[in-house]
Image 1 (cartoon, rainbow, N blue to C red):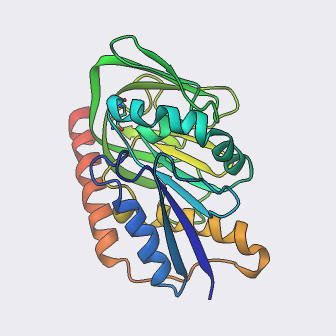
Image 2 (image 1 turned 90 degrees about the horizontal axis):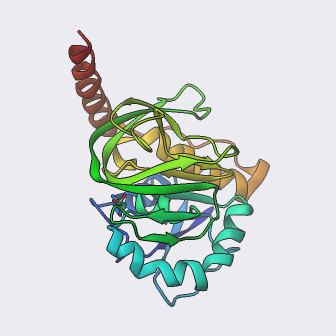
Image 3 (image 1 turned 180 degrees about the vertical axis):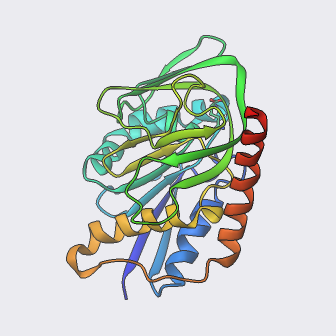
Length: 255
Ligand code: GLN
């Protein structure tokens, strides 16, 4: 039976707005296809095994919580995490978990903290938070699946991407990385970063499957082609209801 090893990094510290729902979605959408799943909760002081994990997940966190993990993610786990990223392990990192993969995070009170530098991006906090519902058009090959994802964002940080880092997508409504360039998130190798809480994956099933297929293709190569369809009636109803409401509001505002 195929198996996925999923690492949940800092589950008790980086977990805003129920971001752990992403782990539940990845696990259940695998089990429903007969794929076994082992979840590895990795906290400060725990070892991080780059060659073991097929998917690594990191949720969001307040500035304070990002400071709590700073020492561990930079000094203890940093090299192993970078090794996994460079080795094309699939990462999904939400908001605070996204920011700490970058070069630094300067909080709204001016405190600049050097973080992992695994991806060429940086974040500068401002007093006004970028908060609200958001819809993003993914900058990914979704093979005919829905290219839009919906979520909720709430961040002081404005993130800017280096030249070799692609955005995850284009903002259709909401703020995105910095409320200026119209882009949201970041993609580097198989690392997918986004500001979308929600949690993101339960009501964006096609993106959840995209991540699962990327991990299964990497692990099993040609033996794996694609996931079979499952009944996503409820997931798609949630997805389409939220997106239609948010984009309809947009059309209304633009009148
Ligand atoms: N503390 C970071 C910020 O305010 C991330 C917040 C979050 O994870 N929602 O930008």
